[in-house]
Image 1 (cartoon, rainbow, N blue to C red):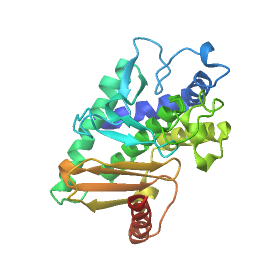
Image 2: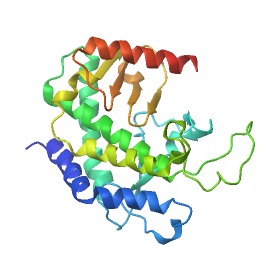
Image 3: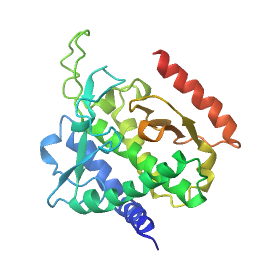
Length: 258
């Protein structure tokens, strides 16, 4: 078994065994009434020892630009990619995830050179995108809502996590928890062959990194250093990639106009 397979397997096994406890910890730790009672843990294996900060988006992805920022769809607040982090133990952060990212970079380089990915490489890219989605969901569950400068202040909102505020989950904290658990379950599924038509690749000449996501629906990531972008439907399956391509364009066009 290759190192990349071993590392993905470790994450799958950890989340199968510890996923419910981890999601409950994330949910309770940033719930206004229980936040002070919950110990910080690694969100991949539940370890509490020597926790480090795992970047939600790897530094190489935004080319280590500390000024690069993304905008929250909930409150339009900006957040530095460089400061967006979640807790992870040294093994999960510096060994497992770091090794996975090395393989992902190799896959992206292969795509840049117009070479076809084999089924294993395509599966690994999908697995990484699902981990990325999971990290983003954990981050939103941990991040406090902040008022946008042009909106009215409501003290009720101040202690709430961003994940609760999403228009799509109607301020329902239990839907936020459900979405987080769904993202864990996606990671625990080993085979990705039924997801192959749910990923779409685009050539791009855009000079800067960009990403957007809708939890439990899709994730878009551009890789300007490799002149390509990827759109992945997290739940929806397609019989043909052409159908996924058309729908992905619809969402990309909607985001570009917003």
